Length: 388
Length: 152
Image (cartoon, rainbow over all chains, first blue to last red; front, side, top):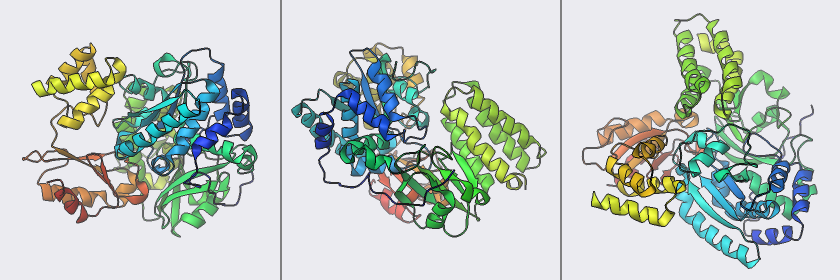
């Protein structure tokens, strides 16, 4: 695996004043099949974290026979350490709307929704004005597609796509079983495309800049660039767009404070990489993928406290529907505290690791499944901090 | 009581008499009354033809849909990792001292409720605080007092 040099990119936020409606118009000169082929060709993968190929998702939804289809923009950005979607919706909202419109044209949807987390309600008023104008311009260019906003109410798990549908349907945000997948039966049981905010902007930009310019960036598995949310012990906290496939050692050299002990890649549900593994770690789908969250910790931080915080977060945000996640998260907190206080031997950590493996296999959704990522990477790499 | 019923009827008229409207209606009531009273939930259940247990079950899932009385202004301080690293404890302490309440409580004059919340999405500018829908990033123990004074 060869990693790329750290390279700054300016695709997402560039051209603030440009007219994204023009991009939709330009895209509509192609047939829906050509649009989907172009997105597949670009290699764009979902930017929310899971990385499903966007073009394939659109293709599945297009192939479904249904009079009603939906396009949903997932703006329920709740992963600790992630804040790029808020910035994108604040600075370049029109590009998000255009991506939704292009998708709607490609799959044959007439209605779109932005599910905005309640914590970002301060954006509502401004967004509504922009959406009203956008909906107007869509009818002017002859695209029968209108967007509405739905607000979340402070539940992390609603970022999980099927939990988000439940929430929009007026229910508790408890994830559904898959299959059926959202492209088959999503919101209101109809074929639904649900994409992350950033994914939709890249979709717009692929049609503005061309497939080649996007595809030339990144690596075979991780095409293009990515917006990173950088926080923690760093003098350069904030939002930075970088080419995918970069080496973590270079990243730390650029963004660390000179005393970086570990980087949490992908938020609380991601992996914690210790200093000794920086140079062997690639940020991308061939290495460690991320929804953009990069939390940097220096040597003054206790990794026990950090793991404890993650687990408290998961225990609170677990929807409680399935047992492995509901009980597992609680037991992990009890377990690491017992080891720390000397009530349990250090070998008990291995038993807790097995519990996270069970949670990974048996939990219904990504929340319970991904607790193992941070747990095993922290316990394996910082075992002594868990005990003493 | 009558006000609540009227509010619910207005919200249901605005959002539509379907289950899909439940969250927007609940959010609308919280916006006006700061929490969901039993009377409000019963009125919503009637208006949307649901059981009141179902309405309560849904509302209680969401941390922003409070089912216990809250003050006119709800303060939420982010408690997740990076905000904690940047000193959210001092923020909570400063607010507790100034408002003479503990986290989770409401002031006697019903002006403020002090809560902590999971990641608010401002990790690069922690510690961050929400007062109702307004965001205040990079706050300090002194500046938070000035900020909440504006809501008095």
